[in-house]
Image 1: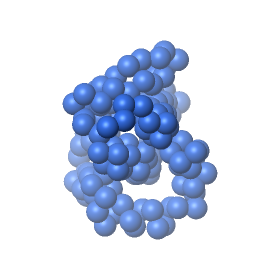
Image 2: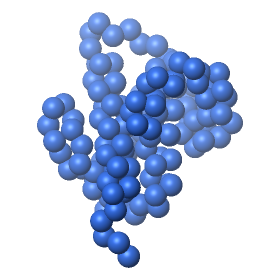
Image 3: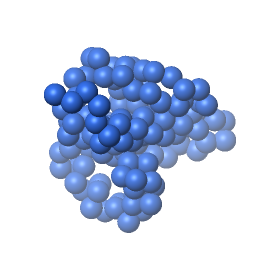
Length: 139
């Protein structure tokens, strides 16, 4: 078993970038000038699915002890995956549940679980997603 793998380092780096990106979106949402748009939650769900959940599943990482070196609010930190999950996906589900809109909550959950709504969202929004998502997730 190899301890060091360059591809693993790249994948962990992309995971960290995605976590930081999502955290920055939440910080912008807290701003007084931010106008809430439900579409933002769908976008965040998609980014979390592709950039976090898919990456973790694809690499078969053991989640409780997975350490992620990320930059949050200009500070380099080491966080464990459960904390990263709570600050991204957990926070998204909490915000959506606070909307008291069961349909939206179910659709967001479907995106996160990579069910039908995920593929519908990707199909109809891929052109506008390509620029942003490719930068933080694929490159």
